[in-house]
Image 1 (cartoon, rainbow, N blue to C red):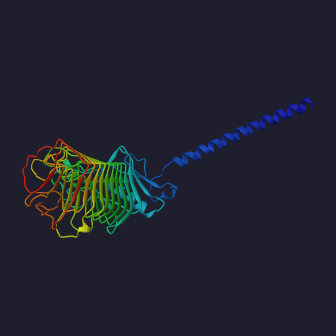
Image 2 (image 1 turned 30 degrees about the horizontal axis):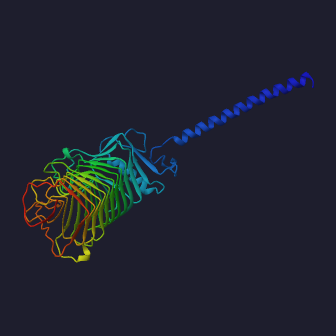
Image 3 (image 1 turned 90 degrees about the vertical axis):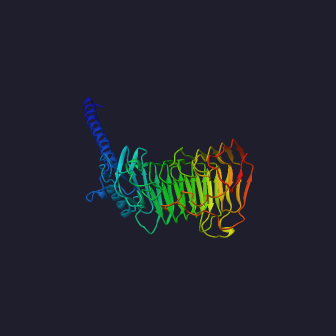
Length: 422
């Protein structure tokens, strides 16, 4: 091969290699641009909502302008409700996410629709404004459709009830419930921090398939969870400090499981009543299990079972099963006589076994009810003086294989009760 041919081949290869390098660089640059476009978020405004990728199921609410809706620290429920409205109108979206760290101040209620998740970073806080002056039974979070709701999850963030800056309203009378759903189905509230409120942490009325777990509840103004006229209720793995009423409360609800919770209180007149309260006034309550809980230093009894107010058949209030719980120094209130480990009346065939009672006040297991004239939570009545006497006879409680030690005498004396002590 002549030298002229070799030079021609080398020249062509040099040019070809340059073209290849330029082509590869163009491909890399194109990939970088595509990646940047995919990662970019566009605000949910009428001009660009169509730019969102349908596979992205989350709408972001932030305080720094990086999300789809931006809150400015004033009336933040407006933007949050706009996000829920957008989710309701666009079925490809399912979730509203509150970005933290940020405090979202609300002056009105947040409304959630069906098949929706409200989630947030642990540093995201929904907080009631100072001196909100809301009427009773107006909650911080509720359903958008008053007739019912289903398929909702609330998880991961903080709710601050701002109790100390709303002292014009009393605790325990229906003010500022944090979450309230009625006629609801398939609802979960978990991994929340809910604190310093006037009313319920979560109130569920006439609902089914209720799950409440992995929450930290500190000094709400009534109950941590209050399930009234509900079916299939389960609460577990919650850490609850009681104020005003109870940690977990079930009223006229059935197929209930309260287990593996840590419940305590503090020594003060506002510290509340029972750690766990099971009530029966109407309906059927014959499948309730309370187990593996640690209940300590409650102002009222550790667990309170109360059936009252109108006659009912044996099958309507029976088979509460309480087992493998730890009761420690429960019943510290010096002003009421219905204190102890477990206080019960009005239920048939209650089984209490394999529990440990250590240092409880009055007695480990007591059959009694508060006498007329005693102010009793729970009630939304201004007087609080309600008749809790059983309306039938023949109530039975089976007590076996429990450990009872170091029982303490209560400060308030009373008559007319049966006590299991050590």
